[in-house]
Length: 92
Image (tube, rainbow, N blue to C red):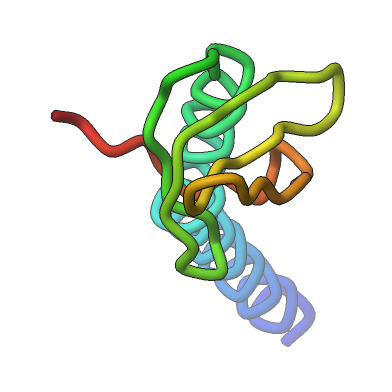
């Protein structure tokens, strides 16, 4: 009877481990890759790049500072934003 109980626990532990492995490979790993790609894109921002922010604001980068950018959204109008707020670059 004792071996049957330990056998059940072993089966449960194997299923739990399998579940964690699937969870890691399908949810956590792709998210880490996406974050790494976004970080690289943010580090490569330069003056003249056309971008869209996470808030949906489109504009052209006027200046790049260490932690922020000046985003030109209209003639004579710039907004200072944190670099991480850039969702993606607009390719011409």
